[in-house]
Image: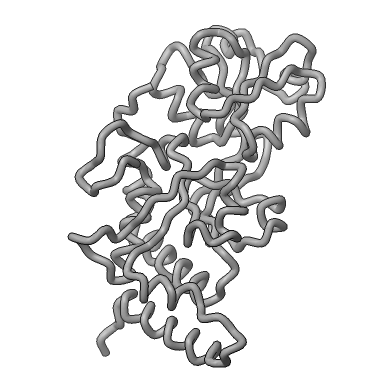
Length: 279
């Protein structure tokens, strides 16, 4: 028996959504709208390597974004049956603070940017895909301070005089404000600036997802170090933000299950973890 492609399933799910919502009082499913439109709209920040990074010049895919989630967006578009030469994906710049509200407002079909799965975002009216990665918050500091045993615990960070660099509006800022009331929280508009603050010593510590802390430690070996990454301060997972549309939600999770089961997601992430990021 021949297994149907995901593109065929997308058409089937869209048809189911159309049948279910045939009443003129009920809107069609988002999946049906995406298939009819012929391209995917993806909200992304462009500020979180290895998932989404904005570059100066367009890539071979015709976009100014690169990273693991950018490749995954292309894969999702392909699963929907969208191909070149017309753009199969339109990337919509957004911020971590606006990922959930942008999805709810219909600015994009899916948010893909190393997004933390949080109850706060869920309460804003979105679904989350199945998790793509388990992370948890980890401190990243200058290596000489890590060698001295500084910032190994939350209590050691939560002290007067300690400057904690954090990006505006995301799970990092929420975590920092909840756990470090005695420290000075320094907020940056651009996520990459928090690590530059460590490099130029205008901040003492960054507390972020384990994968990001480890990436910046690799990019600046001997200068930046992740503190005890095997023992994160918290439990956290990353996933994709979706409007509350059940046919679309089911399709994305089916596609993602195949990407993870085949090993494609792991190889995509590893490729971008090994990438020579400019910092």
